[in-house]
Image 1 (cartoon, rainbow, N blue to C red):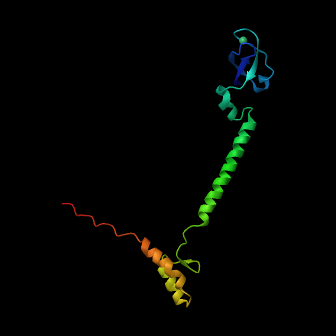
Image 2 (image 1 turned 135 degrees about the vertical axis):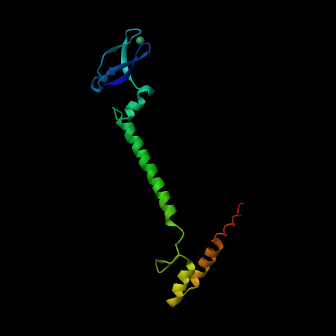
Image 3 (image 1 turned 90 degrees about the vertical axis):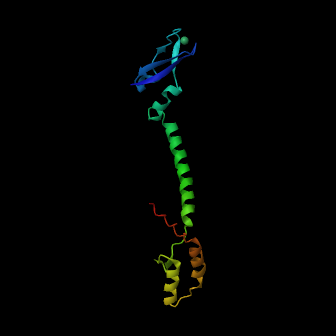
Length: 138
Ligand SMILES: [Zn+2]
């Protein structure tokens, strides 16, 4: 059983009736005001009930599709973001912690170390300044 709104065809008075969904479209409801025939009508008061899956599937599906599309766009944006992360210091795919270490490893292996130089420069420029020494209190 659920509440449905019925609207009078003549005076447009809206009244609420408690019915089974199977009765909703066939129920003969008379207007409480003028006695004319009232028909089931969709109003915002029963909007949320419909969203919970009670006879309003098309809207739910539309919203679901819209959300899926939005998520797809968001996912793509996230991928774009992930596609260019800052390269972690590594030598030949092995994490080295710093580019300086990576260069040292490349050097030890007899490889060209020049490509590491700008990365090390960047790394050094980024190094956080040491914390201010806290004054002793008392
Ligand atoms: Zn009426």
